[in-house]
Image (cartoon, rainbow, N blue to C red; front, side, top):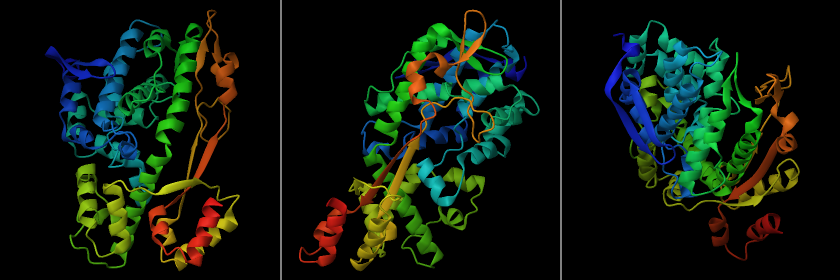
Amino acid sequence: MAYRDEKLSEEKVFKDPVHRYVHVRDRVIWDLIGTAEFQRLRRIKQLGTSYLTFHGAEHSRFNHSLGVYEIVRRIIENFQDRPHWNAEERLLSLCAALLHDLGHGPFSHSFEKVFKLDHEDFTQAILLGDTEVNRILNRVEKGFPKKVADVINKTYENKLVVSVISSQIDADRMDYLQRDAYFTGVSYGHFDMERILRVMRPMEDQVVVKESGMHAVEDYIMSRYQMYWQVYFHPVTRSAEVILTKILHRAKELYEEGYTFKLDPVHFMSFFRGQPTLKEYLALDEAVVLYYFQTWMEEDDGVLSDLCQRFVNRRLFKYIEFNPNAQMNEWMELYKLFTKAGLNPDYYLVVDSSSDLPYDFYRPGEEGERLPIHLLQPNGELKELSRLSDIVESISGKKRTDHKLYIPLDLLEDMSNRSKTKKRIMEILFG
């Protein structure tokens, strides 16, 4: 029997708090789960710094990847024998679902920002490079790793396969919304996934939803909207991300200045230089990063030491509403006052902005256009979701942005009460 068709002697299952069970029968999938590159995802949190806000948010990208695989497995099961679905794409879809987040690094998005990296580039490098994952995919057929990489990169010729894993209603989103809601303990991310899976239909170039399932899709979109503003953009989580980002910036700056660390940050050297190899990238997980943060708490550099103590011991920055575009004069004065007070404004005066577009309809020619969600009418016609749903129409194409200013209020309060500088800072911040 060909490797691609090989089944395990008995089905393997993972107990899962969201889907109850994750079922694995394919030898290829089982072998991929056992690779070093996939097991590494156990050491990367799905929600980065959110565990400092929601204490249950300790789940990993390993959990999420298995969940996305399970949803795709169920979607394909429902698609069997339906027009437009090619059964030959089954294993490709499952592999792409399982491996779609393979390139995420520690505290992924903050880390990428500082070192100007892109986890999608590393996902491609793992799939196509000298890795255990690549060797397994190559056993399926020649060129199979490239096919999987193309699906994840959204460049695969069959757009239907791509849309199952990456679209405005895909297995990725359906898993992380429910999983993140479960582990953070909130109710916002819950929606009727069973109903959505039942009414999904394969078309030539995308997955569509029967019109009778519109209300379940509305619920899903509102769940996504609420999760972004109540969980993903939570101001306390953003405070932790600000400090994390500033730690990495400070360590990089010190390295470039020739500072002598008490412990050589060997795992960071290639990142400071801007040229990490794939092997070096894979060697850096969150346990390693937190180890360095703990050692840097004892560094002679006051800024690095203070920031690391704040992150490790959860002494986060406080925040106020602050729009830098409308309050430029206040910003410039605060910058000077912080400098005068001996607080480096590059590290202790930080504006952070968050924005989200909950649903976007198709507008030809626009940069970054998204394929919309289409509803399948009883007569076989397709209609874009926001044309039939008043709820979705009300939020379509509307980008919401939120600005906050993060400050070390404890350090400001420790300043002498007689200080004119302190008095003026407090006036600007709190009126």
